[in-house]
Each structure stands twice: as C-alpha cells, then as structure tokens.
Length: 361
Image 1 (tube, rainbow, N blue to C red):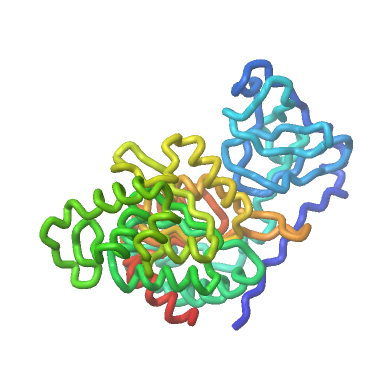
Image 2: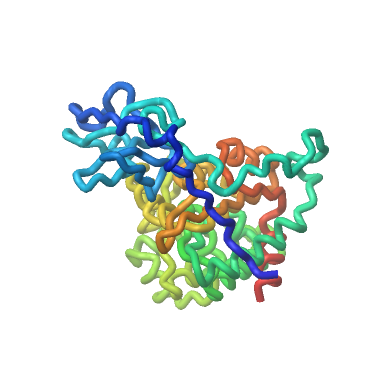
C-alpha cells in the first residue's frame, strides 16, 4: 500500500454568491500589540480574502491570530503581540464570504453520507483498535520522509526506557525526523541515559533505582552548563547514544522550551515563553506531519500553532497530527480543538516507538 495525499477541493469563486461580495474591510493598528475592534481571527482551516476583487488564500495560518494585509496584497498571519502601528488588520466575524472572508472547512472532504448516522465506538479510547491507524502512519511517514517535514513533540517518557530511547534515535538516523520540540526534561534525561545509564536516577533498562541516582540529572545539567552547549557536552564526554546525540549528528533542529519547574536549565533552553513559541512555530509552520508523544502541555501548544493545511509546491495539502499518550484525556484534548487531521492513539509510548521503529526498518 502506497500513501497518496488527499485531493484538495478549492472553492468555486465563479459562483454569484462570491462574485457579488465586497472586498475585505480593514482597520489600522493604532496601539502596538492591540488589534482594532471587530478584528477577524484565523481558524485552523484554509481562509480566503477578497482583495482588489480577487479571492486570495492565506498560505499560512495559525488559530487565534489575525490577518494583516500587506502592500503586496498578501494576507499574513500575525500574533497579537506582533502587531505594529500602521498594520492593516482584516475586520469581520462572518466566515461565509459575505464580508470578504471565506473559511473553507471542507476542502479535503467532510465524508457526508459515507457513514451511518448512528454507530458505535466513534470515539478514541483504550478500547479502540488502532491497527488501521498504525498502518496509515507507516505509509505516511515513508511518504513524508521524501516529500514533507516531520516534526516530533517529545515528553521525557520517551527516554525513560532503553528500547524506546534507542527506537527514537533510530528514527532520527533513518531520516524520519525534521525537527524536535521538547522541554528541558527530555534532553536532560536523554543525556543522563547516555552519560550514566539512568533517567531520574533509575536504570533505563532494569528500571531499578541507583544509589545516589537523584543527583544524576543535576550532574548532567551542571556538566552541560560547564561545557557551554549540548554539542560540546556530547563531544567532551564522547557520548555515543541517545536522542540528542542523534539529532545533533544529523543536524536536526532542537527546540527546548523552558518551564517554571526546570532545573538548571541546560544551555540552549528557551527561558522566555514567547521566544520559545516563536522558535517552535518556525518549524511548525512548515510541518506536514506532527507526532506528539506523552507531553500534554507541549502537545496542546504545538497543536494550537499548527493549521490543518499547508501549501507545498503551490498545492494545498493537509497537515497530519498524531497525539500518542497512555491517557485518554491527554490525546483527546488536542482533538477537541477541531482539527481535521488529529489522530489520537491511546498507547504506552515505549511500545509505540519500538513498534514504529521495527515496522519502518
């Protein structure tokens, strides 16, 4: 089975309902970081704006940001905090085209008429059979390795186990990872595993507590800070395994977003939340598939910055998002945001990664 991208069905703007509507209205930003009253906010779907009599697609999107019309006539997606005096912000709350804004939520098909109105087990729970989802994911990742950009959002549970840590490293080595988004903990415990064979003081293979192990992650952070960078730490200590080591060796970008509870942190961790958000979004805006593993807050943050579509080679295509966690609440939380392509999988991430690595060999 080979993977094929769904065909995008663009709106038919030749219809009278679209030809007779006015251009979008705009208002100028008068106060830095503050949108005019009546601003329009982006959704996760493709959005078209009537500008100078033509319908123009905003080729990037981000939920809860505002469209700014540039002098070129191109609509840009802008966070409120990045609005500047003089920016022309689109106004209007209607999304049916009547105010020059059309939100196209059915570009990849809604499946109407394909299913029974009443059916069992339409939700995603621990009772769901995920066989088909796994099969689709294998084919998707093989396709994306050659044609897309795969962004992984990782929680520390990924590196608490020897086999899952090795599996994630193997996926990086084989070209299935284009960017890593995580926090201080993922990198710290991965490096701890490489340097001391533990994660939070627990042997990553036997899961046994090691005497004095509660110092291990602090030792790693301190050594990293002394080295000055993760690259120098890996080199100075001749680390030969792990997710961070593989990412550095393959030149895969790593974004580590800090939090209030961080120890240290490691060098390179973003302490400013908005700088971290910008760094994460620099990769998510180009992502074609996002795989989020066992990190609820990072998953939601990443999902909220990822639109349901992207434009590649002048073609509109969907962005696929997978959320994997042992908690039903965690995986369904992201799906509740209304994305077209979020696939929740309730699974232990260690088993998930090992299974994935074995099938993608």
